[in-house]
Length: 353
Image (tube, rainbow, N blue to C red):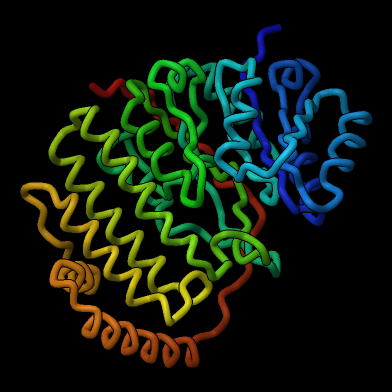
């Protein structure tokens, strides 16, 4: 039987989560469905016992292939190593500290067989350390007929899109080294796809706040985001995309970088001014013709970036933080989200020129 789906799992320092992740991929699959799926785990020279755990798991479960890298190359290049060994018509990159809720792989296989898309987008929930599940703000974009201009606003990650492998080959799409490696990969994947489909169903639980995760680590490596956005813009220039899409991407880029700048878990206060200056420089490099800042508070921040006014930005941020703390002090803790995937909504595949 042909392999329909290759699941690539890069592994680094995730002892506490690895078995749960691997178990969740094949949970509940029939023998026929299992034969249609291959799982490739890439040990990125993990400093803990993950390598040995993978070998032991593979000895018990013959559906797992393990690659051991001789040196640590980082998340993007580890994914590339798994991709190079993939045999499936489609590829899904799953991070090794995350979990697929029950029925996810079956739902993905069924949709791939039904619509044969270049890229299939899925919904996810944010998984907190206490087990609480939270809807992502971008999930609402999955509703309705697939539209590239709207869907480019989804979280730009590798794990929320299942891709036809020959699409990646045709456009030579691979992950670069460094942090924020998803930016110059996941965005071009979405733009290059001729046939987009949406499975409006929760098929992924994304763990947030884990100690050691990039998004929970204060480091100057967050400055690598600027080089990754520049790489993406070099790709955009070669692709000759629609002006409206360039405006949409630019707005999303500035908003994304402002989130990084304002995040206490990523940006040390002493480095925030320098990071803001880099945002302003990127703004000047890539501002497209016809761009207008968004409405409301987000637009105000964009205008401050345009003016390279860190002093006003810092004052605005401080005011928002005080107001936010006051609101949280008067609000009840939200109820824990149920661990139940949302019902699939049938959406026709759309061919987009």
